[in-house]
Length: 325
Image 1 (tube, one colour):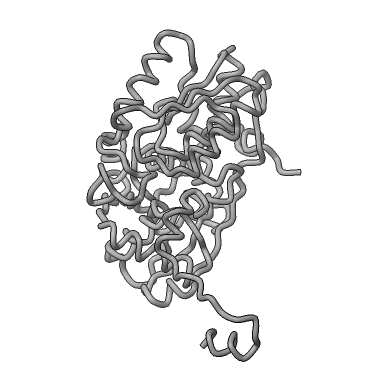
Image 2 (cartoon, rainbow, N blue to C red):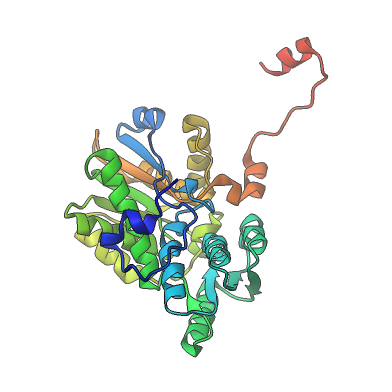
């Protein structure tokens, strides 16, 4: 049986014996070498597959702590604003806790993620406006006392997400030279910085944003005004890192490279990690971890649009062999 993340890292988390463990078996995700990418790019690439978390994204690390603390504090319901992954994670952990979840999505959120949240029983409302406007409404509901807010402005969410830094160091036997990760709202960059700071060893942090934040094809990082922008600036400054900007065509190309070169099917926003690495100009031999934050099945419609089309063929071995060339 998988040890709940809260118990694995309890010395680093704001929990006590009185905190319930609302867990779906999150954390302990694979860290795999990427030999073809390493050879092509001239650096030592590792992929941290956060897509292997229970709801398919890194959000589960923070959500187990946020929802567990909300239940401990007597919350009657959870609310989140979301571009998709937070929605499905909050809905799943609220269902596990037996309390309602209210999900506010912005227009253009990937349909599979909305469907996932709905399947967990969440009340999903599509806000006529931006992510920032949806988050402002969610914060107002928290202020009124009707809901516990489980977005990354909740420090318990950030605390849970710091655990990816501990796992990376544990799995590598030390801290990498650099970490690249998608940059939407910035909460994960903040969490990584705090995690490595707690370890006393800091890699260069290279958060990767889309060139066109407001309408990028990478919907999970489609956030025009990142709520953690100041914390991201601090993190990159104190880690000798920088914010890298990637164009949509670069993100899509990296998305396909991860699948065809390393067998990793992720959502487009996750591929920002690789797109940023290709732009970062790191020295030869640098050991770098790319965070793969969400599974490819989070956005199957986009995958179907960009993947090679099936070829129709007769049920004949010769015809199949010919078509397979």
